[in-house]
Amino acid sequence: MADLPTFNFEQELHAQGFQCIAGIDEVGRGPLAGPVFAAAVILNPKHIPAGLNDSKKLSAKNRNLVLEDILKHADVSIASASEREIEQINILQASHLAMVRAINGLQRRPDHVLVDGNLIPRDLDISATALVKGDARSVSIAAASIVAKIRRDLVMCDLGQQFPGYGWEKNAGYPTAQHLKALQDLGVTPHHRRTFKPVHNILYQAKNLSC
Image (cartoon, rainbow, N blue to C red; front, side, top):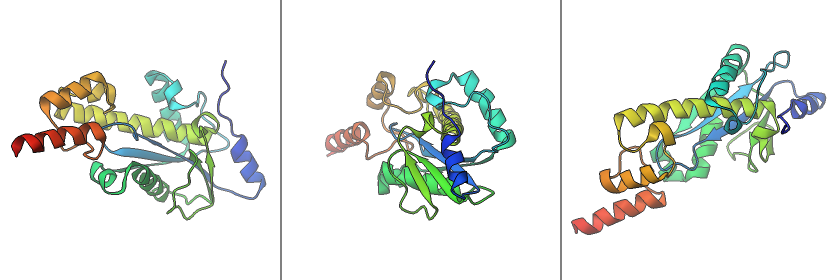
């Protein structure tokens, strides 16, 4: 059985004197449509939800079961950056913007943040550690990954009902064959990221045809 994320990083930080530690993760950097979401979670050391793991390694049923436990016992904040913000500042900076917004939305201000990935958001004014593949290593980041994925999937499912044909309720905006074909057949919606190449190419073709 693969190793599960642990509370080891958090315990080491506690030993260094940090009292309130948040894990943060984002979801939605790769899709062609929809906002990018981030979640920040401060777990209760006395109640670490059972079954915590990288959200990608859990079934939808298990993610929802763990989410209930997270929301019951942890301090949780969810934030996003819009499609237009993604276009204006690029997807990496938009992801970081969503992360900072999520941290700022917590009821308690953490004194250290564990960030999934290899970069710390430049506007994060709190002591932080970047953990590559952190959602598979830290339970705090794993919890954040679950919260962010479930929220974004719900948003994309709702948008999929508003804009049928793209399959967002199943592909969450990622460039599946169905989504790419719908882009060609149905065109670009207000929720597409216009700077992403497949979307940009469709808009460029339409512009040339109208000239």
